[in-house]
Length: 564
Ligand code: C2E
Ligand code: CA
Ligand code: CA
Image (cartoon, rainbow, N blue to C red; front, side, top):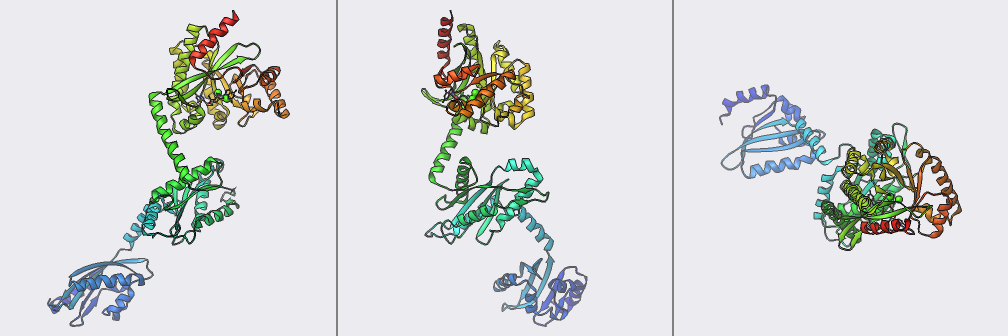
């Protein structure tokens, strides 16, 4: 290149350029740099030709990177190379583009470089990275990044004599109850404070992640001893003995349920480790919360069984593999049928059945209960009308309804349509609901029940005595019948205070105009005792176990014969 001809041009570029620009001719020693170049690197006019000074202007951590890029370019005699590095205190970023010219021996004779300020772009990129890797509310790793990093640690780990990668899955107990009582915003603040508490354990080998709303995880990548993570758990527990002080003045105590596992005991990848820790955590939830549990293979078997059962249940709901049994309810005065209660069973083979206690809670959780419940209504009414038309039955039919079904606004229309289709009189149908249904959503439930009652259905409050058993709300809810739970019946004779309570309860309930049914009556002694206390109706193994529709037909026939 003809330098003389270009010098004017370089001077023009350097004075007019808003970019950092520098030209060096290593043969002649001619150097020119724009003002911006000097500003960007923070070097003086005199030093612009000094490559060492230029190198010194680069943030120390990035110097090697720059040197490497430069030497690689020179080694390959490449004309152009680009490198990004930080300057100053490390917050400013520069994109450095350089063009070198070499002589035939490979020595550099001249170099142009342009510096481009990319601080803003880098900031945006970092923000984006933050969003991709970190949880926006709490600043800990998000789920994906936690798993990615954990997988990386697993790949790097060697076969040690004990499990050095240890994982803990944390769930705050009753978080929804806490937010219900302090409000959502305060609930968020609580989560942020909790995450902060966890972050105190964060280090180069201990990482924190947030998985769901109130679910977090901690991983140790390189533990010094077996079960080191248990020390962290103990420490967190100790800290939770002090309440979180929130900005609205509330002091909130929380407890946590924790599942623990390690690599490779709990799996060969991060996903499996988390799953196993999660399963161990659920184990804690099931057995009363506020504790920790180390994952064991048997929990996985339980879990797999549970998942299989859940899948089987979905299939059963499609195929309607259920049967109804009916348990008689007798008037306590005369041994005459007051009604029968429909109790569902899941039929898994010709002579194998699963009891509702084992699958109804699962069906309530996954929503299957809605379709099961609809089938129960149809089947119970079909059987009922058959008994009535063909066997002279004149008792009632009681049907259990779950909270989930009652929440569905179309429910009352559904059951009304079902009775109308079969010419059943609604007052022959008693809907059994449990106390917990009421308490969960009092006003809405009250309205739903009032509507059903307007249509003529009878309402029974089931399992009375197992929940809150507040007598005060009995006045305010539209019910006709109260079912006294088996737990009262079981102890009313041996425990005199239960006896007194049961007696008082029956008297009070009757004064409110409600009918009473005692459940789970197994002995003649209990029967006599309840009769003496004026309990209206008796249900239990003593007088009849749940039985098939055909057995009910026989029973009705037999009873009708005996009245003649
Ligand atoms: P529940 O409504 O309290 O029903 C009474 C349960 O106690 C029945 O158990 C019955 O077999 C049992 N039982 C009755 N008398 C005695 C007795 O003298 N001694 C003993 N030890 N037990 C007695 P089952 O059939 O296993 O039902 C369990 C629960 O499942 C029911 O409790 C009810 O809450 C629920 N359930 C049953 N069928 C349905 C249904 O169709 N829909 C809904 N949502 N829940 C149902
Ligand atoms: Ca019931
Ligand atoms: Ca009951």
